[in-house]
Amino acid sequence: MGIVIKLTGRVFNSEELVSKYADIIAEEAGKGVVVVTGGGDVARRYIEMARKLTGREAAADMLGIWASRLNALLMMYTLLARGVNVYLSIPETLQELGKAYSSSKVIVMGGLQPGQSTTMVSVLAAEYLGIGTVVNCSNIDALYTDDPSKNPNAVKIWRAKLSEVEGILSREGVRSFAGTYELIDEWALQIMRRSNVSMVILDGRDPGKLIKYLRYGDIDGTLITP
View 1 (tube, rainbow, N blue to C red):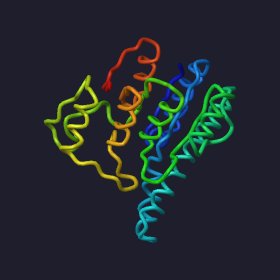
View 2: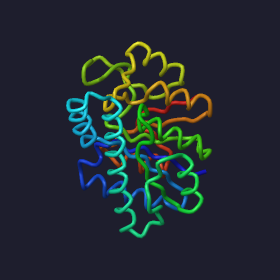
View 3: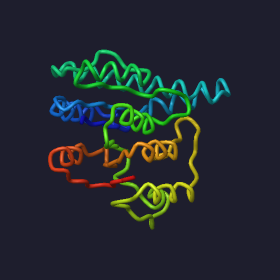
């Protein structure tokens, strides 16, 4: 069935983390893996500069997309150095992704279009390829009832239905400016609903949690189901 792994762009602040995730992906390559990389701090820096220099949100969004593709290239070359059968280009459309998936065991990609989070891209990739679960290695360890960095009383959610997550987003409000996407946005949830895609949210700062999930099905985070 394959697997879609979304990597927070924060992973690419650390050479050690990139290496560890490359090792994990290499072990899973035989199953068919799509890796979607976020833009992280590089994207945020360019987005902020573009916003100030151009005043155009679309320009900021495009720079964020290219930053995510830069991270994808780094992962692609890291996997290639490990002898992985990785697709040697970064797909920029779902059609390109489909062609790549038919010829390679591992595909790495970043953003696709302005206005889309890379979380949404990961869900679209799963939908397009008929893969039932996205593993979101995020910059926090799970979904919470509120932003845990701002609210010390926020409660971790271990299991949730899409309707519950939609309720949380409606209370918090979803921002749609480049570089400010939420952990999971309403558009990603809509795609998950229409195609019955589930999502596992894990702490991307700890690659061991991804290993536990892939090897044993152990979810030390949040499982969101339709």
